[in-house]
Image 1 (cartoon, rainbow, N blue to C red):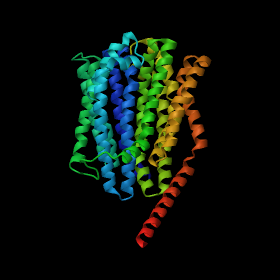
Image 2 (cartoon, rainbow, N blue to C red; image 1 turned 90 degrees about the vertical axis):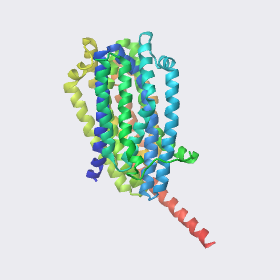
Image 3 (cartoon, rainbow, N blue to C red; image 1 turned 90 degrees about the horizontal axis):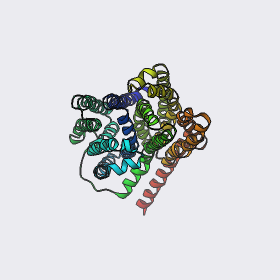
Image 4 (cartoon, helix red, strand yellow; image 1 turned 30 degrees about the horizontal axis):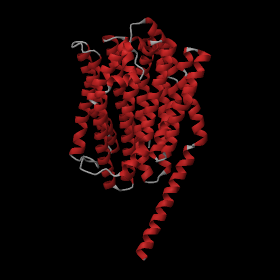
Amino acid sequence: MVKEFLSYAIPSSLAMFISSLYTVIDGIFVGQGVGSSALAAVNIVLPFTVVLFGIASMLAVGGGALVSKNVGADEVDKAVDIFRQVFKLLLIISIITSLLCIIFNKPIVRMLGATKNLEQLAADYLLYYAIFCTPNLVGIVLNSFVRNDNRPKLAMVSTIAGAITNVVLDYVFIFPLAMGIKGAAIATGLGQIVTVLILLPHFIKKRGYLSFGNTSLDKATIKEVLNVGFPSFFGQASFSIIVFLHNIALSNFMGEIGISTYSIINYITTNIYMVLLGLTFGAQPLISYNFGRRDSKKMLKFYSINCKCSLIVSISAALICFVFGRSIVGIFTTDAQIAKLGYHGIKIACLAYIIGSINLNTLVYYQAIEIPKFSNLICLFRSMVFLPICLIVLPKLFGLNGIWSSVLVSESITFIVMYVIANVKLYTVKVINENENSKIESNISIEDLSNI
């Protein structure tokens, strides 16, 4: 089972790592080629781009979980129809979002907290990011469905190819062509187009279960997809809320230098988060498939393996930040004060992912077994209940250290509360038993009808 898990998790995590690494390189190019103000502007837009990623994740995980479950239950036609409906809905959402961002880019960045000095830079970044909104979202969703369609290596290759394209174009647009912050946004969009072009033949040439085709949006199916997938959106939105609340707290506490410092910390910790997310994305198809087969032992085993791997990754990342953090932060900025603040902050902030990784695994696990209410509770607790309290109380007690440690404390409290109210083993057995009873009742009803 470990080998089976790793066959999905390693390509997924590697793809996510490369994806996040190009985000880091993007930050390096922006910081060195455009300046610290540009870094702060990107960080202002970050909550919005994370929400867009959340919309894509909602459709990808919600649709992917239902597709894998139905394949596991030998209902392939239903799985294909779900995929086609999700893809159609995605195109509608991405086109509308793109138009709104292009038209209202300045009001949006002002709403996100951009100062007068940062408003134009942030608006430029959002404008050019929005132009490529459709390939950005489509790339994320198709990547997930390819993984659920038993081709995790193709998902990895497409992501890495897009990342390499992004890095090369980042350098060309920012340095030789001097396009500034808009060059970074355009490079990201073109990189996603490469990812999409690599993925499309899988569906067009029907190399797996899933393929493109015309279908009508069914209200019940879309509702089920959104219901299962909503915690992924909520999870990304909660991350967006975390960034937004930190931007406000740091702006009040330190001004723009605080936002610039936090943007560097975000670039670094995003790598940790994306690798952990890759592990959970690798586990999700396996859990969903065995949920369809009603195999609770395998479901819990994959969850356990995922948690152990996540702890290894998050602890290793924390050690790297402690030992090499000063050098890593120094790559992003030449400002000695920002570098010093960033190194101090990263040593504390990276610890949050040790506990946060287990919360993330549990969140996706409950989506995979279609109990999204607990996934939503995790998102609610970690970002909208405990974090705001921590950001109000801890800075008063510990100053800047209180801001950096707020996520760690919030994740820890969330873990304790969820362990008490939503034990994974207990609810796995419960949901399997409920499905078994439902199936028996359904079979009895069919037999009764045939007898009549």
